[in-house]
Image 1 (spheres, rainbow, N blue to C red):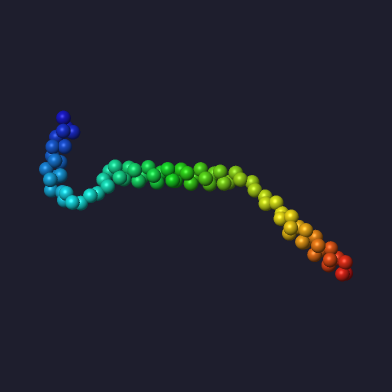
Image 2: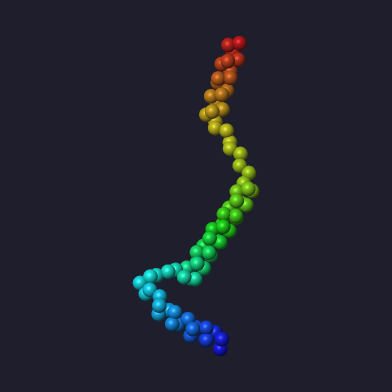
Amino acid sequence: MYATQALTDLVPLADELDKNKVTPGVLGFIVFAALAAGVWLLMKSMNRHMGKVDFEEAPDPDAVAAEAAVGAGSAKQK
């Protein structure tokens, strides 16, 4: 009963609104808040998963061979 009284009091206010003005309203805010919360949770999960990564890059075979050749050449010159 009280909810219907509140709605009937707000109906005349709706006629005073500009009908050419479109606003997102409460539904737009809820959708935006849900998207923001989802992005925040995904970023938190990504940071947790990236922290678990243990990655050591294997040395480049060409660079190792070049270093060995340079090292052997300088050892012979001494």
